[in-house]
Structures are given as structure tokens and as C-alpha cells.
Figure 1 (cartoon, rainbow, N blue to C red):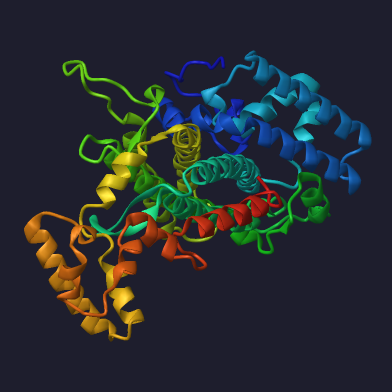
Figure 2: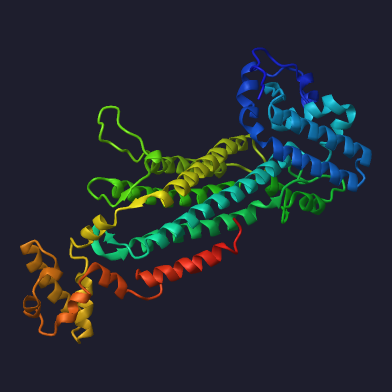
Length: 474
């Protein structure tokens, strides 16, 4: 978009829409230092939408005539077209998106344009714009998050019976199914979706009408403005309305949790794609090579998502720090809320898109997973449970299995490789049927309870999740 150069000389206060009280020109450096139009022009659509609603409300309460409101609306729509076509000239001298649009409106329709700001301040105007923008951003993020969840369901269904080692402390623990593991990722994202929906409810409150900090003497109909803009209600205290940024912090916290979940998933993808694990192959289009080592296939996308998580965490801490010392009501500090908020949304949107495109298209190397499950005595707990079923107390069964593991470890074999006579040497209650449980597949199948890893349970949870996603927003 066209934009004038930063001023290199003081700007006449008479050129400012607020300049009546000032007798000295703004310092050229201060002009540039305090301007926000370089980044808050991103709010142009919300600013115009909010101004149109404000004008319609002013006409409804007879502060403006219908003709004046119509002229303002036509002017604002024309400005929207100028911005979207790239013809609008943004000016640093006009400080921010609000003053740029208002000044252009006055240029286009004359004195009537000066009436638009009746009953409002930039303080409640910017708070409204940010809420409108963030509401739309949350809706778009929820759509992308749901797309990723649906991709995980497809992958989980495809691999619902594929056995892999489950880990604790990154040590082989028990057999699980790959589908069950993917559904664990799904559950993380489901909590994230709930948090975004909950956050959106608090975002969706209208500050407009709070004016600078104390409200206004004009007979504004704030409920009408809220309805025109699709808000669920209005902010109930004018001081809080203009100074509150809790909604932005809450969103950054929800975004940080999502990025934490994506980072955990990224870590597993990176490990699984390594030659040491060789559990999966990531699609080539999401990887890069090395400039010196021709054999390399680097998992750059998950690595970047893992790295970008810290960036989003930083924005959360930055917003908390921004607000921690501010007295009521609005302070110029709050100009610093937009860039971290914008970047948080951009980073999260890009990360979700990358995973929604990449993860459902990975290739599972099932034989490698199964072979890894046969190492590390993943079915030791199954043998203990078997003995408990034969009447042995669990702590005694634990000790018996520990002795069997020691023998198998000394021989470099798995429990299932020990002869029946050898197993019976540890406890005479062990019979031939034990081998049905000492296979990875048998172990997974045995955990056929709600929330368990058995393929039947995985398919049941997938069906339940698909039914849920068919009835939720996004």
C-alpha cells in the first residue's frame, strides 16, 4: 500500500485533527516514534466496519441525520475500496489507521465527515477494532485447528491397529497403537478448541461508547451498536472498557498452549523421522536437504514450529508485562499490544496450516514400529497382569516378572522368546496361553476399555470424535 515518507521536519499542529490545543509543532522524530500506522493499518476493515455501525447508531438516536449517516457510510465504503485496491496513501503524519481514515473521509465528503467522531474517542475505537479483528482471527484459527483434527482422525483410522512402542521417560514402556497415539494429539487440540471458543466469548464485548474513559453525554444506544457489529453485549464500565487488554492476553495464553502442543508433536515427529527410530517418513515437500551432505532429509517444518513456540511464549510475557503497571484508564503503552498480537495470530495460523497439511500425509513404517516394540520388554506388565489373574498379588507378580526380564536381558532376547519351562521356573502358574499376551498385538488388544489403546477402542473414539466435529463450529 502506498505510504508517505516519515517526516523529516516538525509537523504543524494545525494539520492534526487534535491540534487545536497545541502551539508547537511535533518533533519530527517523535512523529515517527509515536506513529502506529505502519502496523495498525492492518485494522482498516474493522475500523471502517465499526465506524459504519457508529454512524448508523448516531442516526438512530438523531445525533446525525439519515442523510449525514448515508454520506458517511458511502465515504467509508469508498475508502475501503481505495485501501483494497492499493490506491490509499497512508500517512505517518496522521499517526494511525483511525486518523488516516477519518482525515480521508473529511477530504471526500467535507464537513459531514467531521461528525463521525461524535460520542467516541480513539481509546474506545481502537479497543473495538482490536476485538473485531481478534474475533475474526479466532474464527479462522478454529477452522484451521479443526482441519488438523480431521486429518488426525483420518490418519488414526488408517493406522488404528498399527502397533508401536509407548514410552515413558523416552524408554519403552508398553505397546500402544499408532492410531491411539494420534488420538492423544487430537485430545490436546480438542482442549485447545474449547479454550479458543471460551476466549472468544470474552473478546466479543463492545467497548464503543466508553469514549475516552468516562462515557459520553450523547444519548448513544450501545446495545444497538453491539447488535450491528455482532457483539454479544457491551463492556459495563467505561474505565475498564478502554484499558482492558485481558482478552488479548487470554488469547496469547491459549495460543501458547496450542503452540506447546504442536511443539510436543513436532518433537515426536522429529524423533520418529530420524534414522535411529525410522518410524515415519515425512513428505519430501515438507523437508529440505543439506548443502554438504547429500543423504540428509531435514524435518525443517516441525523444527521451525518447535522454535516458533518460544516466539509466541515471548508475546504472552510481553503483553503481561505491558499491562502490569498501568493505572486506569487508557495509556499510550497500549499501542504496543498490536504487534505481538498480530504476530501471535500469524505464527499460530502458519503452524496449524503446516501441520494440517503435513501430518495426515506422513507415511508410517509399521514394520519398524513393530520391531521396536519387540525390544525393551514392552509386554512385561502384561505378564504381571497375567499372574495377578492367576491369583498372585501384584507386588509378587512384579518381582517374578523382574526376574524373568533379567534372564531375557542376559540372553539378549524378549520375554516371548523364553521357553515355557523357563517361565514356569519363575512361577508354576504360567501356562501356554501366556504367549497370546506376550506379543505386542496381544498386549494392545487386551487394553479394550474406554480410553484404552485396543484397536476397537481407537475406532470407537474416532467415530465419536467425527460425530462431535460434525456439530461444532469450525
